Length: 419
Image (cartoon, rainbow, N blue to C red; front, side, top):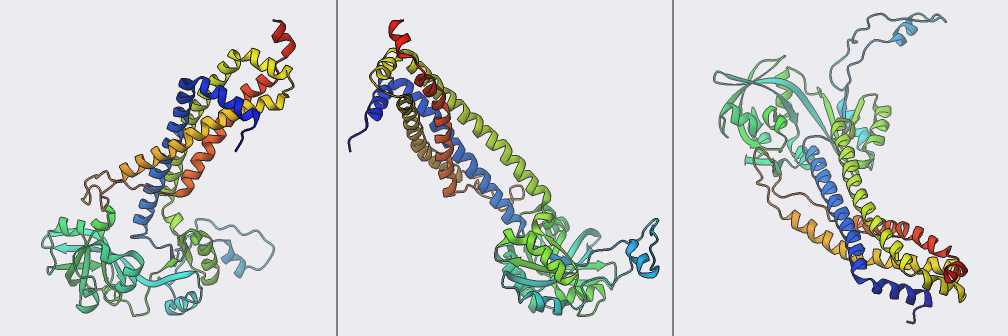
């Protein structure tokens, strides 16, 4: 395919200063490769920590929130236009847990966007082994549904979690609890809550979620045994845990469920607010670093084109004198910038992929108590990152090339030739 005159001139100027062209392309390449690497690292770690949070946190948790008295109560008793003022409000006396949980669950199951729904009984307890005591929480669950929601099987260190439904008065404990109380599968542990009688329970398994606080405090029991531990009947449920087909819809769906049920629906974004804030701050830092790198590359291109214009000023004047318009001159120098950007971007994509792949194979010593279940640096190979890298690389080079090109287009051929 025959190139236009503008393109031929652009290529001629481009290869006339090969060393400077290569240096400018390397600047773009470095910026693009770092963009891909940092975005891959950020998304990989974010996805990993989100997945870790879903090991213990449902997409939506439905529970009965403790309510504080407000002026609506006075309005219901004193029905006039007076302004009601409530001094020193107290928490309202209300039934603990969810009323008619089976009815609530049946209603929620009609929503096609919900994938898993399971009831839970949660209570604070004291674990006792010999003379050693430890505070923690027991989650009374349907362990089969729990495994579908949180991959209990994948977190098992030893034992079979299904034994929770087969063995009476059994318990599945976190690895931290087992370590602190020197317990093993088959040992007995005494569990006591604030209500009900203490129970001697048999350890049927040990799990490790990778979250230290969870592993050092949490245990699982059959939901019926948890109800017995609290001295409650079979209808007592403290939470309903819900997973969605698309967890990104959790905030909006939680507000909808609150309206339908009248109970507090806490979505995973609310439950992990600090984690999401940390993600945003890290994204701002990484994007700022990449932005500075691309800006430096842009200045390199700007300087090279500026020097080309300075050296070729008489040639530019001759071009304009022979009929080249200002737009044609702009086209010549913008094409140089675009060619430099494309060369740098294409090579940068390859280098960025190789760096990302290399770091994904870096072993960091897991799984162990300090790194949790993480063995290798989590990296993401997300195709839109590569498209964004090309886009930002070209935008930077076009912006850097436009100003020198506009300067060249304004050259007065008469003044230059006479000078």
